[in-house]
Length: 112
Image (spheres, rainbow, N blue to C red):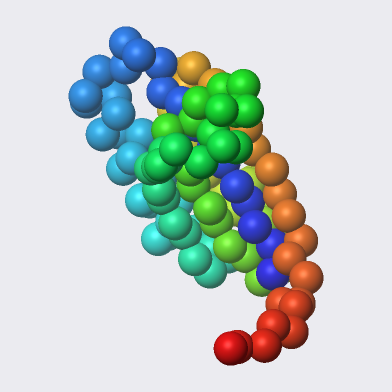
């Protein structure tokens, strides 16, 4: 399994209409690109943990996209519907971080 993880912070001046267009493009990418297995969109939560003070930047949103293999990830990245999403991201984001991960088999944990 491969994960495509996007942390993002929209520009403060982004209009409500532009923000809605960006989230609509995310929904299209999530549902209409065949290689996407799962797509999660989340809001950052802070709860007073010590590691929160070490974060050099705040990213209020995350998109986590799951693929079966690297070919599926690459098909997603080159898909025309992802291109539309990418255009909006470049226009509307103040900052982004994007990482791809190959997920290993789960570690064998014992339940208590």
